[in-house]
Image (tube, rainbow, N blue to C red):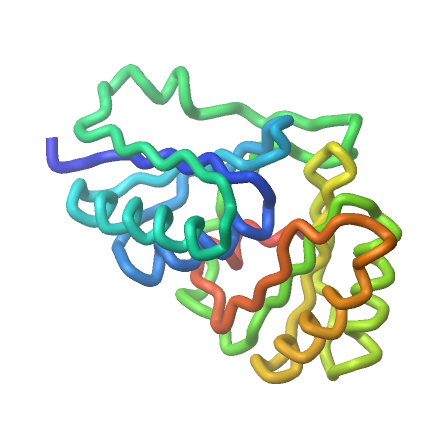
Length: 201
């Protein structure tokens, strides 16, 4: 009865990674998997001791609120031994967004990174490509990957030192207006283990 689950459904892939980073840095929780849905949004499923899960849930609510990102955060204490059949999804590939919709974190990641990750998420591909081009021209950063969520939502990730990534994200998000809708623009200094394990390959 000391173990628990927490489910976090949040609109946007980049806000989900910021929330996950905050949760892992405040409590000893483990990501079971993430699942994309058509809201568009992400459902993150985490496991841990009840006290840690409750602390992580509070961090998730506070972080989502600070970002003005709508989120559903729910804790299930002492989950039934039979419930994984319902909440654990098998591998699933979406031909619409041409990528997996279920991600299970790798276990061989280091605890934290020595670099920062920047995320710019837009609704509209042209907007994010212009934003990232501007970001790359502004600072010494590199593109890590991109993540599609459906509904025209796309996130591009960059990496570098905190100052360079911060400058690049600020310059990039200023270029979105008129080309698409900015969903989120964030910098994660020294991303947590779970965030690193879930970055698109």
